[in-house]
Image 1 (cartoon, one colour):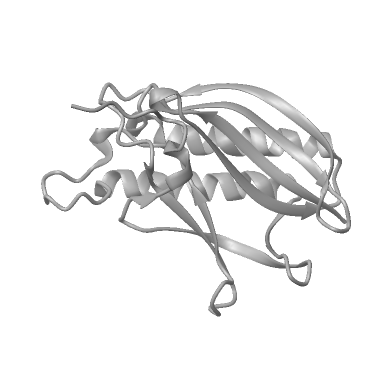
Image 2 (tube, rainbow, N blue to C red; image 1 turned 120 degrees about the vertical axis):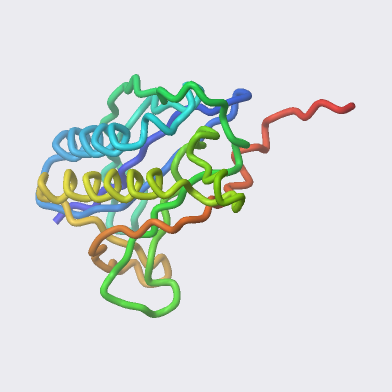
Amino acid sequence: MTNFALYATGSLALGASWSSRIYASGNIAEATAATAIHAAWGDLWTAITASMPTSSTVTETFAATMTPSWKFSTATSTTETLAGTSASKSMSVRSCPLITWRTASRAKGKNGRMFLPTAATNAVDTAANTGELLAAFQTAVKTGATNFYNALTAAALTPVLLDRATLTTLNITGPQVGNMFRTQRRRGDKVVPTYA
């Protein structure tokens, strides 16, 4: 069994960047894992692209083989050219939808999170004046997350959570998507503010 870290990286508005990672295990080659994460992000992006601004992109995916101590060994990358297709403006680069990766355990710390790139303003439920995800966008993210998960399992990968203290894993059973935007603070760290 080989353990992999599966990454996606890209750009956001104002020159900001983002990255996302999920761990997975399987009796497959690194190149096969790289193909799987490429396909998974393609499937996810297809479901959400209409609510992503053109400034939110995916520019690379890669699969890194992990050592027994869960350190990077080698990696295989794929150049990506995915970009949002919404005509609406970008939300704040620190605001993003969130996928929660559920496991069979309901104990604290036994679920994972994956922050998506910044969405466009047409993803916000303005009719309800709540600032929550538009219901159709929440459904699209859930569909995309399910397709993402299925692409990995179809490639004979098991998505997992890593317990860094014990270097043991817990199998992910599927995604959930809440109706609230979340904050990823470090995404705005390199954005220089202007003042009035």
